[in-house]
Image (tube, rainbow, N blue to C red; front, top):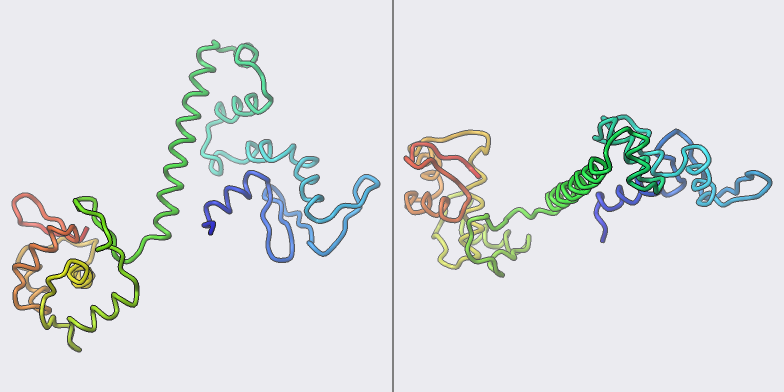
Length: 239
């Protein structure tokens, strides 16, 4: 199943988006109803074909339409937009260099930097897509074993919480199995504000409300990556 980023990328590449009833140009306010037929230059077009002719006739195609957007929209400088337009025309590097009054090696350097920018953009899009799919419980980056211990469904989580926490939120018995331990630790970690720092005493005070052996649990929170602390152990925070 495609995520929102993939749909948005497809929309930008073709120059329009669609709703259940219509196609909408991304570069102006024009829309075409899917249930209508549109006359254009002596011919009749479906809404899909008409939005495509509109993008070509009125905006010069998707690339030209995108490059015509403001730098706030594209994230490109004026020089980058200019050279990308020349790249889009399929011109040779020597021709581009002559038109811009720069060396051919500078044009090649622009190509390299723009490809690097593309790679970085793909990494960023991947990160944002994964953030939308992030489960409540993730293995932290310090974990040495990534296996089925981390595959915890919502139903499993609910059952584990009901088993190990009483109605007041106090832990009846700390679990020994890894999957259950992770769920219990994630619940305890939720009791800390990620935007705050805590002293060791403050961490202890919060944990004491949930378990008797708060010292062991405090160590587990660090070991399993739910919390971090400074080297001197004076400051703790939720990671």
